[in-house]
Picture 1: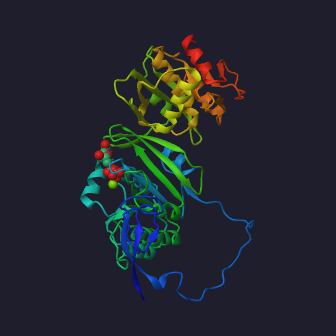
Picture 2: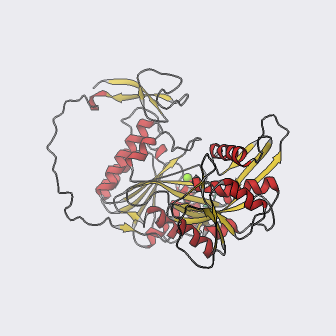
Picture 3: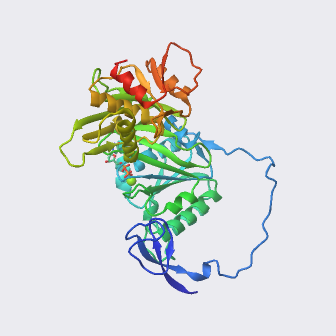
Length: 452
Ligand code: TYD
Ligand code: MG
């Protein structure tokens, strides 16, 4: 067996023979770490293979059995509950509430008589016990172990050989003794996850891995992990806000980009069934710079307040401060407003905020952001009962967006009666709504200036 040294990028997982300050694959600085590998286990080993079996693709198979939780928001994100024999990765910043969410879930699963095993490499029994008391999980049968050896854990899972709910908190603390690198490195994380997934799938168990997230937002190092598991969820939110958003990034058993909204209270996470109501609850009447965007997260419509503040700047390069939206998108929108609508923003400071701590990435938000900017720069409050959606193109044209009906229905449900939308958008909902069709961004400027 020949042990060789290699340098593996902790960001993208690419392998280099020499150390370098920058990874040539992903351009990340200082991400190469020396890890030793076992050459004989590589592709060059000359072991003989076995013949594999084929089966008919359209032969009858059973549906994936699912286990529902007591949280509707969680089930939606998972596409209708956890699939037995699946592996899920939950990533998020430290302190966002991953351990809390999973302890709450195991609390429920143990109440419905599932075998729940919670393995922590980060916290001791007394720490987890304190949290479970806080969550009111006194009479449950959750079994807890503090361990970081993935070999032992996989062996135990195989020995128990019973359908279980397995929580690994967190995958970065796990290690396999046969691999030399430190816990948390790409080799360790990949090998440990592989070992645990195989062991869990053999007993048709539900495996949930907790993963930490790096500064740039990817699950630390192991982007490779995302390929190994069936479902990847991100738990997002700002530590200063109570609200947390659980988002599916990948799901082999359901739609992606679904969101579930939770609130962190002193006794754990509470689901929020109607987030639109919550995000709009602090809205003020008759103030300029506030527009309501009828957005869509996955299959769920959600109304969000976009706030803009445009003020004359004293700086040589004016400030652009954004919370919850994309800076490149804002620059584009400012350029279009400047070039096509004669709204001068180049000597103005712009502050843009998506209220409630939500991050939006839909281009459909362009129209609402533009409305908020125009309203602020002209100091004209927008109508309190109007929602906006539409994508802005570089020529100033307003483009169609997906699923207008879902957005309109949500707006109607929450008492909005004016819908500002792209003129090409076909909608069939009659109700007592008035539609304001916009062809060009300059139409929106005229509309707001005439105070409609
Ligand atoms: P935790 O689940 O430990 O976060 P993670 O596992 O993602 O690192 O939760 C962290 C925060 O949540 C911590 O700052 C305390 C707070 N918290 C509450 O506000 N209420 C609660 O009931 C619990 C258990 C935690
Ligand atoms: Mg934790």
